[in-house]
Image (cartoon, rainbow, N blue to C red; front, side):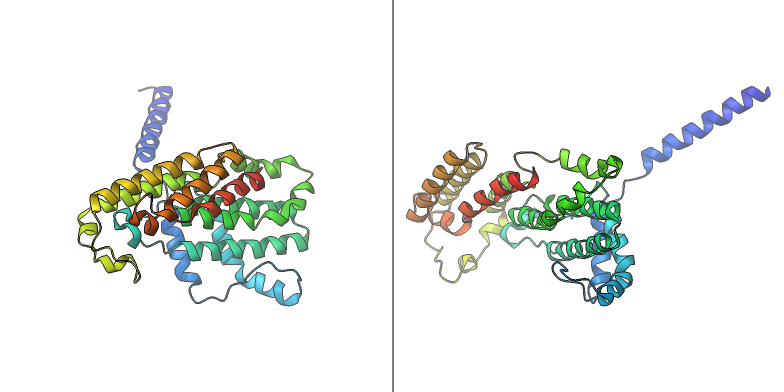
Length: 298
């Protein structure tokens, strides 16, 4: 075999090996890394709320927490995130990641303040991008509460917009701009779509053996579900949530607000049955939040 033929065969072998490795290697799941991170911060006293003043004390605390901050920022950049939630549990489903993810957001918010004080605006922008990444990891669970906590995390960046305006090098804004551009302009944090997902989750749960074995008292101490016609209640609940999904899909804010008011009155009057009065969340305020999400993400 000639020298050139040998080189070609070596190159082809390398390409083949890379192709095999790329097919086998599974992309990292951010949720696994976050869960390990939660154990690390379990007994750590983390900064709470926005730091208005910044002294030697805050700076020393920042330097102490820097390894955790760097981890949180890096995990927020990972695209894949699956919390492995058991949606079949219905109302009993656990979402243990929400509280510590909010803690991670506040930790990064604290680090952004350190960046601003030191004049490192490029790092501050990276921190804002990380908080957006965290908000996406939070609401990927498609629950209403997840969407709300994700939006809450994003709201931590609302007072940092002057930092964006101070950036002279546009390349520093590329990552965060790309993430913002990837948001659904009508439903940036998934609150609107979560109404439909929650309906589907609860309907699947209602149809499951776990629901039929449920003690009526588990609906609440003041609820007597023993006399319910379950089939009729299920149908009424599904109709109620279908209407709610339609309302959240309305782009006309005035029409949506009017429809929501009528829907809530129908729920309160029992038009959609007793189970709907128990299971349907008060969606009026959620609709207002969905509108604010759009305004603040623009």
